[in-house]
Image 1 (cartoon, rainbow, N blue to C red):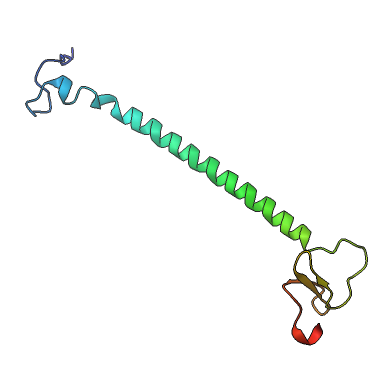
Image 2: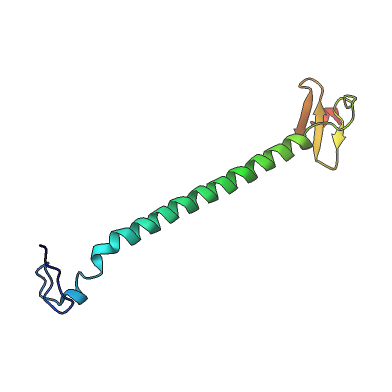
Length: 104
């Protein structure tokens, strides 16, 4: 039969303090700390998921913006003022910025 320590008895750890001021609440402390750790891990997964989702959406939007909207290929070195890009005929896709000076 195990004996439980009363609140007002000296603590079993040998500190000389009363049990209620020393180790009384510490026996279940690991449960609380574990619960907080699990919540922190869940929060990290949620934040990482949100960031990843936004990053994928931004990538999809940027990929969509780099495609020409008409069925025809743009004129060589055509400059798109709205998106600040130009068509490079040798590469077959848009480049950011203005075309090189010799092609303006």
